[in-house]
Length: 328
Image: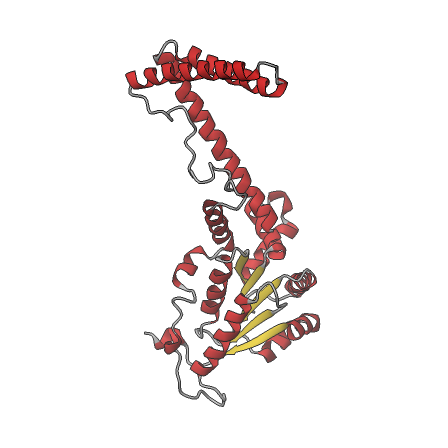
């Protein structure tokens, strides 16, 4: 996934460089039309520079004398060129390509061979776009997470208060992000509505995208819509749907929100097993969020699915009063 992403971005950089080169050529042609003699001077400078390169390769006996002569010739030609530029008030770099990034000249890499900051930003922006979460992540992330909105009073028969429980969940989720490459771990968020499950998914998504991980978020309903369009409507399938289908399997982290709200039948059961199983095989991480209890999940989904979930996912129970109602 990451390799293909970088290749796509490199293609965009090549387009930028070609555009800058074309625009520079157009400016050069404009100058040649305005200033008779300038094109000839540039042609002579180019020829003299080529001759100089040939001298260094052929190494004649009188190389020092010839090199000195050519350098004087080039200096004289450049002086004539500068006189034209000064006379017509032309900036010296007028015919040079105007790259968007002067640090890497729109190559994406510095002279030291390191990725330029502009490329790092582009990778992260691209990951935000394909995550399907760009607007949510601006509002919902670890920086905006407020532990104090959770009650510190015991709830029902739970041993921990909702706030104490959320501290444990928060610690697990931060560890999940910090050790993403080192620990083979998946998460199952379960509990009633309005308890912070989707918010926590968004916190994790933003943290990982900022670490240049590819994250793909879908509600269960839309996830199976993508799968259905790919399986049964290939002739009319859009490019966006095809990319989304591939993302389900290829992204570093897949977030399936609201599992249990989809239309449940043999097709969805078979496909959820296929998705979870394939991602386990390829060691791609997944987060499932559901309003169902563990017992309700076991009643809704096949034994094969629940076996994968119970064996490979860390269950995190969200409980307390519906925060959406409490805030009103």
